Image (cartoon, rainbow, N blue to C red):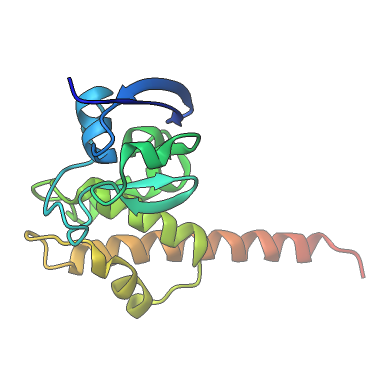
Length: 173
């Protein structure tokens, strides 16, 4: 076996310690060593977005990050984000809008969409298209994906507006 390095990281909330080859990509480590196969290997050049994961809270291309670079950090994969909140809302919207056809890009697309919803809650259609432009989809033509993301943004805005209206109604003059 080639020289290896010991890394310690947190993956989907669980501590992990493994020996890895210095040139092993993070997405390969997640898929092959930890059997977290939701992130896909597509272009291996950081262009398609199929390998998107969160590293210390921000999305990165798993094919451009070495596993050793994740040492001491926190990694979240689609498997770790699919239990509720933003991800659940996006999954339901993708299903409703048929925005997940073959499924190859879906994990990366959902990871990017979740970061968008959480960081730019007032994004318009143009901002959504720009945000996901680094994630390729060969099946949907993006219309359904953009519609699904916009549905979630609109629902969250309506919910926030309702909470604001209720608080205003409860205030005494």
